[in-house]
Image 1 (cartoon, rainbow, N blue to C red):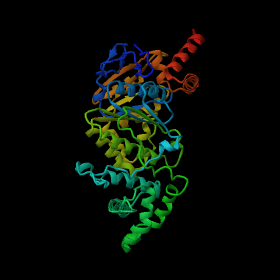
Image 2 (image 1 turned 90 degrees about the vertical axis):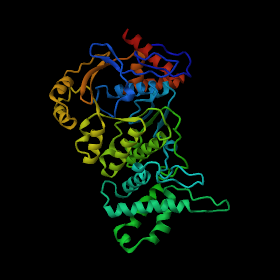
Image 3 (image 1 turned 180 degrees about the vertical axis):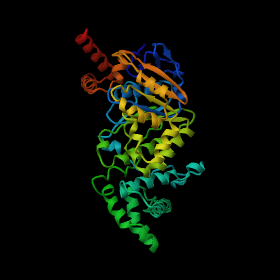
Image 4 (image 1 turned 30 degrees about the vertical axis):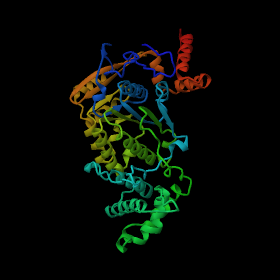
Length: 443
């Protein structure tokens, strides 16, 4: 492995991936079960589903996948719980957003493209299939605030949608102040519109079917209360031109509003990838999957897969227990299983009781279950099962010592690297010092 001397250059970490000055690699994946290099055009792989129990090396493998995507020239976006990608992001000069920093985790679901006259283009006239995706996303966000885990009845959904379309038209036709500027759309002005404009225009039937006073009340914390920072940003995070970005949701995942943050972050990612043509896009969601349990987000999940497919991209979902699929709404489960033609399963030797259900959920045959049961692991490498459409293989994930530390998500390693980073100001130096400490300790 050739490591650049200058800290300003990216550091390519894998044994199979020497630093390439001339451009991205054509493909790199790992080794087969005999240790021979396996080169795969991973940029062309369809959507992935990764299952690995605690200690099986799931985060390590997904870290390696993320780096492979990046090294092969893809645009990589990661949503994570636990900070597993911090070192890899830092080494390659990517952007890292931590949800403990509220100012960086402020969003505005109403922001969208505008025409030359400044009018908000909330309907996508360039794609009939995706025409009203902006409206659907906002409906999902507001219905979650309003109904939590309850389901919306059709009339409520229709009236809520009508209010959002009416709000955009109200904003586009507004003119305030001497400069005749439009009203700025955010959750605060939407709530004010509901209270002062839309409620006055509702028919008697709509008032019976739609508890507008209840909605106005439940939106209050997001407008004037403790959560007012969350949905009223003047602009969303600018990530259009960055190729490697991670959103660490550890802190947000402990909050009731986590599904909102997940959906808005994903919507923002989708908005940005639409602006990048001719480049592969990879979205990785590692454990941050709670929003998949709510049927109200079903349209959004279908939209997410559809958009990435159209825009030369793929999605990787990673979970400790793939059985999270079992009890989720059928529409969302079907979207995931149908779209994820590539499945990766790591060592389940301590959880063999789950294999029959995994076989049923993922349509894996008996021979493939035998392959999963045969997976081996050592201190140096770990095998994993991968099924690409109808073809199944066992590969070995083996990288350099330096890469192994960069991809390591064990708490003891992460804490020590953080300490050494504070002392040196360099992730690259911190990893080398950590390796030196380990050599002295173990010889």
